[in-house]
Length: 412
Length: 117
Image (cartoon, rainbow over the protein chains, first blue to last red):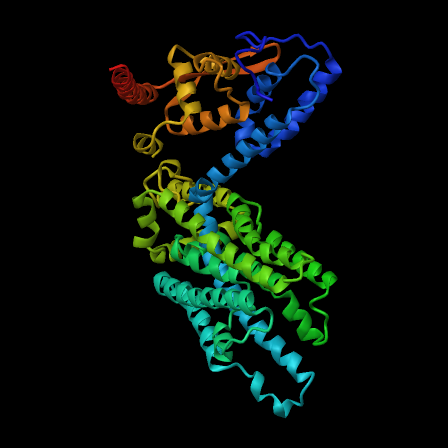
């Protein structure tokens, strides 16, 4: 059904006497439900006027929206949501979120690699005597991958973001290549794939969610960097987020460590795994716009786990395909959001790393702790910074009134 | 960015109709829908979702902007108007369409002349 057309009886004003108040109320309720397809910010501005237009275009006595209109509203709402994703990430909170992810994701990947290796050792030691454990010691390739991610974490924490990004990207490219080869092999040869063992050894990372690896690499390439992420969340919250992610994504490995005979392919176990990741994602969602965006991006890691619950025969193939898709899709989103920032905006955090900021920031943190000011979200930090600067202004330590001065947490 | 894109590509029909509807003066959503129907001779029937998606895009590109708000029958009505940029873009698109139509008319008349000769 069309909202209106020239052939309809509605006048320019769109006034229509409601003949059936109960029907009109029901129609309004259903339209309101449909309008939930739109993003909250759009709804806040346009909900009333859209509802007015929809009701003005309704036939007398109409109680339900037409099929065409339902599809149109749902599709347009979704399109607006998709169109806003780059803006959602290009906003300060989005860039803050990517910075936080560039801090926590590489560390989570490193822990997951270690957990995976420990789980394999536990599983094997339950079956063979310890003195025969040589084959499950980490192979050379796995050690290289582990060391590479250790280097990524250390380089990221010491402010050498580009080197960390380069190593993470090489590791991700290898993992993706191996997954592509694996998918091709499964499709051609069925489950009895005959691939050189060295290839799987090189993967090393295949049991660690490749989406997480992809998020780690692309956030290192396209974000203001892990040091900025650390300035935003602080050590304590960063550790909590890393522990949450490692526990959620490493759930099967942790259970295998506790009980090597755990039925990790049972449906109930898989559902528990999904729940664990969902809780981990929720943990990363500190109550701030940046935190919600961190959780939103991390939720991409849920996709392969949700695929795990599908009752299909080619389960492994589906998981690998979904992982690949999610891991690849993360990149255009990050790139578009990065390009959405002005060139000067992009250069600002990179050209001037927050090295001299560290000492000032330590002083600021001490002030927050002394005054017991909430300082976890960007908004709280912005207010706390202004309060700190106001005190310094009163004491004559700075010459500029804080609200006119530079606030690193104020949206630009 | 949108203006740049629009210069490279031809304007979509709903966008053209919305800008044309607003060229005469500010209108509210329902007014635009009925006017767009009239302009297209009843060929294009704008859906509410399509209209507001286009308005969202055109507003962020600075081609249209809210004019005023009114409350009629307890419902909010927001009027939109064409900006100078929007008018310039509509002018350019109109010129492009006129040129295409002129070429089409010229070729058709040549064809008719050839057929009758």
